Length: 166
Image 1 (cartoon, rainbow, N blue to C red):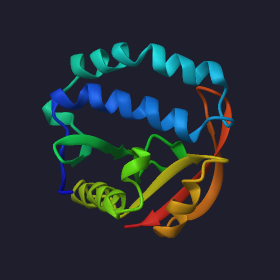
Image 2: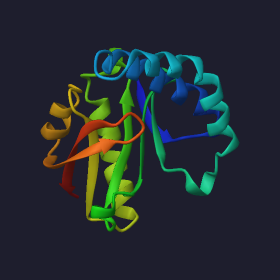
Image 3: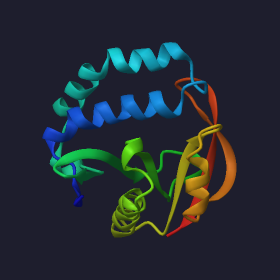
């Protein structure tokens, strides 16, 4: 299997929306309400169209992981919107389909986001991860230090905030 990491293209929006739907339904079952997971399935086409409609090549803070010509993961990054970390970068979203995990590709994708944040002038970053998500262990393994609790406001759920010197 050959893999490739590249910037997101407009044509990737449907795949990204689908990856979010699949990863949330696999990872967050029992953590987030079932109605929310069902809503993700139902509004996937709408989310893909919205992403396509707002696509801007100059503000394209995404990388995608492509394996055998299929987008199987992505990372979204940018300036942190957390008021406690205004001069910090952030990995805002990071998803890899389950069957492509454990091969080191996700780690390479994550590193691409770190490299891009460095090029944007950041020397530190944060990542938020819902409590109960097994991915918390991956963020720790990749050097993240738990620094505080946060709240995923859309669902009022607690999340762990991890800090990285990059």
